[in-house]
Image (cartoon, rainbow, N blue to C red; front, side, top):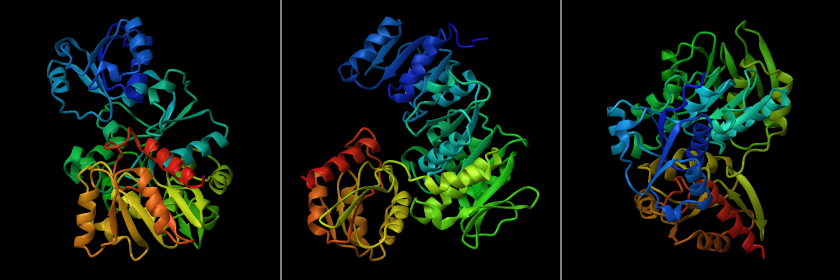
Length: 454
């Protein structure tokens, strides 16, 4: 039975997930209204035409006046739950949920859900490859750029949805129940939204809230904040570790990636140095992916073959090109200090670093500490440029230059770099002050590098 037919639903935010949710809700016969803080002139004209043709009520750049009549509010991940009109609707009896939760309710497939501060996209993509290579019908969805709901309507019971899910999305789940969930790590991020690490960790822990003893929770044994949450989980807890020899789980033994299963048996997967993706953080991502896939029933042979062939994801330590002996690497996905620390660690040799962007309330001391003589100069742009420069100089790192735009940062970094150096874009910040998303920022960087080659 379609439980959404004739339900009065407000979709908040007309980004990818909001548009996909709107399309699905209209298809299911809901009475839909939409809100976006942008003015109508900033909204795609084809989208407006589609909404009007479907008799959807549009609130652009104005607060919805129908909050007292709603059955449900579907809120986009970037919109805070304490937004005034959302609170009003909730107080009047509306259920407030996210697009991933709606997708779970209306679809039939089985879910793999992956969260963490860093590594989500790489791990989700890698797991998706393992599932596809095993012959399972698989959709890779969520924060990787494909709205969950856009695929959920087409799933059957035997399909799998490998889902990257953020803390923002988890906050708006209530029934979501994956077959396998995974928590990769928890480091400070989105403090402008969550305010405290405790609240941030609580949001991440929502990933296993509804799981039971027949399901699995994969968790980073080496990450203290993540491991602390494992004791509250009802599902079977499967740790992974880069450093420890485990009684159960996935770890490194004598240079090999191995599984120790629930019977205590060792299963050798492949050698750790066979991975094509660089850095210790990517070894962690590979261990997590191996554990997720193995305990979801994927064969060790398929897992090993995929690990040996996987070359990473766009915008995450992506090699762009070499100009005059200088390597250019795009790590635009480094949207918080910890992600950029991992990128710096993964690069061999001296670095000219391009950083800065939207301020999420992060602290940059550990980020500056990670330079360890490798970062020769830091070029800063965006809103956080003065804050990062001040932190760096207070900590004794004075080789900084503030620039106005990406073109300038690439030109200056090229002039400063010597043959054998790497120019690394790893901003340690979100992109929202200058770009709509980290992908747009990364693409702009790559285009600027191409212009150097002309």
